[in-house]
Image (cartoon, rainbow over all chains, first blue to last red; front, side):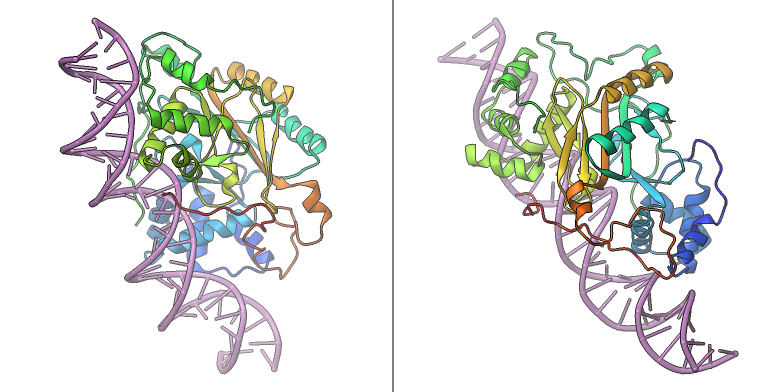
Length: 183
Length: 183
DNA sequence: AGGCAGTTGCGACTGATTCGCAGTTCCTGC
DNA sequence: GCAGGAACTGCGAATCAGTCGCAACTGCCT
């Protein structure tokens, strides 16, 4: 789910075999699912789609392949503020680091890249004497559309009103719900 | 585990009762554990410590209280790059937002606040028309100490060396190991 | 002091992810 | 092309974090 869709299909395969990693049918299927995804997918969604290409693929293979790609820095793992469940989401790593904004009300995910973010990373490397491998900036908040609508957006805001009990717990969902569970 | 230890003990209690939230013994115990923690704790560690104050406290109470504090914006939830397991870590929210650097080799966590980070958040609010509630910037990389030592830090780096199989999977641990599992 | 809404402990449950193992397959060297 | 072995896979069971329903309990307001 890149900002610019500048990915050469099959690039993953080339990269992996260049590194002496075996290319199996299952891996090819999983890679192609990730490479062609138009939105962030979690492991169970990747499994479901990969099975359309190779019905025998197993859950563990998906997890093992995701681990492999992660270790090789080809994909990024996201939490997307855990808007629904604890699953992780994956996207192919792009040239440009970007952050993810998750609307706590509607669940919409927005991506945003910025020179300031790049500069911040350079500052960290310098000032903290760090070599950055992955930088994950995830923001939870309220999008313009949701702020436009009525209803309490008061959570997280410094509203020291008396006798106001626990604010609403769950985020509303006008975004697409997905079927849960893997396999 | 704040940058500056400028927390007034009992502040949480006051804040909660100000908001009409009932202060039970269990909550007091959990709050005090979080307020006095010198490092990031996950739910099971919080439970273990809270039980020293009130032996009857249950796992679910810890989770429910953490949820409460989160919703009220009194604590932040962190992943710390999932260096060990999938548990979340918690820290009391401070005035100043800061990022967390996790060394992928030794597991050390470093905190860092920066005007650039603040500026970046302002930019996001403006350019994306967003109201930010939580901003979580987590960085995985290699600290100076670990880079000083030998051994492959090549993961994640663009090293298209031929015939190099899967890079080492697990991060080494010279940081304190913890016992896993809750209750 | 009394009452009850808000909390709690318990035990069962779910969903995500991992693991050991035995069978299979890709890739290399011949 | 083909054999051999390391790398990979599917399977089933296990683990682990976190959640839930329910009946008993208790702060806190009046």
